[in-house]
Length: 247
Image (cartoon, rainbow, N blue to C red):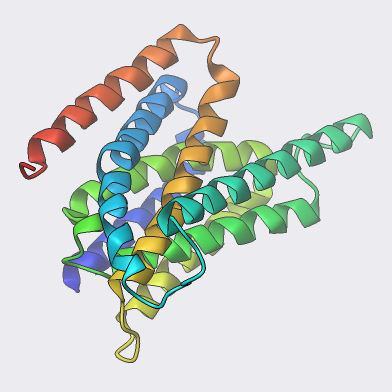
């Protein structure tokens, strides 16, 4: 429990710091954020998704969503789609406000849509962290590193979309989502079933992939950032594969 608590605290600190004016002002930010995204995407594709694929057979032996097939892939698709919807709504809201001569940030309704969706994602991450010993999140420190670097890159995009409101309100609500998920996972009456955890992690994987792509794709004209992304993904991917047990 201590290890999971320290993990949640570390992830919360990323939210507290990453969106601050001081953190956003560093000149190395674009390349560093691309490298952070590379680490996160390497973790999702080389560690999280393969483990979830193995969990699919476990889910099929339970009575969880019996009429559904390929559960983990469906939930990953749901996570990606929700993130795409939120990103599209945020960009459209900013375009409308710019056309009206208003500040280049989202409107109130879109801000709350975005923050609510990321609170749900963070609650899922907090719940997953509260499951020590589950293969899909072990070793826990690698899960924490990947999610922390994902938060670092994602908070930059959230500040771009929502401006001062994210720094003043949004990041604290995301911290609350992390804490809530961890507390739910540690309630004595709550059993973290492996099949349910697999679906939660699949949703996280889909959302993470979309959030990384939405940060990287608008800036692919900067070749140095692409190199940073590829280099970080390669280095972290080699580390993941070297730590994976032999098949």
